[in-house]
Length: 114
Length: 153
Image (tube, rainbow over all chains, first blue to last red; front, top):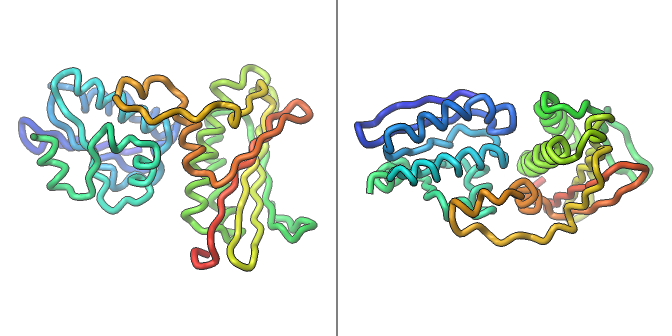
């Protein structure tokens, strides 16, 4: 389960997740994801466009990191692009109402910084 | 393993060890057999989410008895004139647990509320068109159904 971390600037970080966020996939990246998401209280865009499976364990990782980041004054948003499977899953259980979710990368970044 | 049942259902079955290392092989079996049975990819994806959540629930909450016997998977597809349906039945030897008896929970309004748990069952309910449960011969038997119209086939 690859995870890629890139700093767009000193305020915004992009974390790109690729593959299956099932039990083994999430366990593989959970520590690195938490460190990358919460360090420094940055604004964070999580790129989910290449996630091929999203289970509850992966959603819990998103939620706990979003909450930890929020407690440090940061903000997390999700960029799903045209990934219908991920968008539907987030919408079906109401996660998109808790972590802002966008199909457009520019809007996601702008919202994260606002 | 593919077999043709008495009611012209197409069926595939698998028995796997109750271990988290088997969740990926189980998903791979579901995708492979689902494709062979003619189940649309979108419906296989819904069943895959349910399979992962039920599998995790058995291992996390089924107790020692859940780990003492294999988990059974049975995938069946039945075609009709106006569409088709598929069912995935998961059987396990864990503590008796009827997920249908758990009241549906309201949507969390804050990030903190999501810590309450139960997300896996919420995801199963969100992805299944039907659910049925029985406890027989010392095993939980949960059947997850999905349906699709002929146009989606």
